[in-house]
Amino acid sequence: MRWIIPIILVLLVELYSFQAVKTVFKSKWVLGIYVLVSLAIITYIALFVYAHDRGSGQNRQSMYTIGLFLITILPKVVITIVLLGEDIYRFLAGVLIHFLGTTDMDTFLPNRRRFVSQIALGLAAIPFSSLLYGMTVGKYNFKVIRKKVFFPDLPDSFDGLTITHISDIHSGSFDDSEKIQYAIDLINGQQSDLVLFTGDIVNTVASEMHPWIETFKGIYNPKYGKYSVLGNHDYGEYFDWDSEADKAANFEAIKDLHRQIDFKLLLNENVTIQNENDSIKLVGVENWGLHFKKAGDLKKASEGLSKEDFKILMSHDPSHWDAEVQHHEDHYHLTLSGHTHGFQFGIEVPGWIKWSPVQYVYKQWAGMYENNGRHIYVNRGFGFHAYPGRVGIMPEITVLELKKGEKLA
Image (cartoon, rainbow, N blue to C red; front, side, top):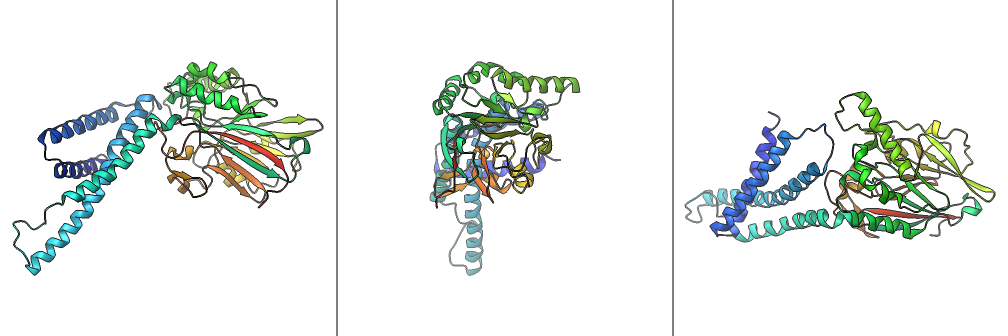
């Protein structure tokens, strides 16, 4: 019964899409090819949904099936909306003509207009081409984003400290070693003082990272080291394990991946970054999210620290900052997060517009946010997940420069 409504909706969009194609293209060959391709795609997706074990985690086939579904259904939804609007107009026109009797008609509804179907197909080309671009180019269109962050109480010798921040590697999604190496070269090219990674090294299982260990081990060792924390995908929560022992073993293997790529994994703990007579505190919590696993323990991670210490917090999910950190009495100066991916879909024109559907779920979803001197930067993510592409929200390598003083207006 749960499939009845989805099936009806699919049939509806398929019907309207066929009508648009039939109205614009008169060739039976075009119509025949369109029907065959549509049937083949629908059959493949239906068989995948029927046979796929949803407890087996995310893999490339499931991601590309999602991509195929989106690139097929969203353009047809656009067509359906346009033609449904035309049908409402045709119905109202038919009612008026019928009661006013202004013309002779063989049918109640006026004929479907060709130019409306042309408009529908033209509009449908926008999501189709955007999603196709996202799956072929956008997912590896890495952007280096640089930001200066000002703090009046930054220790003097750390004025100008640079941090390269990456998040959400999702190594199980990768399919192009040259593009990943290019991204690593971009990271190395920044020559920052500190490299930080805020979680989700895999989609589900530790073995996803094995082909990429040497590549990520190639990230240079900066002056103050390389540190990381865990994300929600690193706990094996989205997989049906044969036993709790298998799940625990996978978790230990995922934690060890950080050692293998020369990152120090912080598990609800802190370290001191020393320069001359000054120091800053780097705090790393396990995943804490309003909608996901709450393994993070900020109190434990901050043991031995004082309110006066300058603190950088690494916490995968930005909802942690919104719920607990931004008003915390111990004053965490800068929080670094990821998790949202910017939904891998949106519109960004610097200085003009920044929009994504994910903003209706997360208040802090991409870029820098500030509240009463506490800052959070949400990285848009290095990799991709679910939809195998990126539209408008590109993979990000962040370079933050910490400056002492007040930001000039």
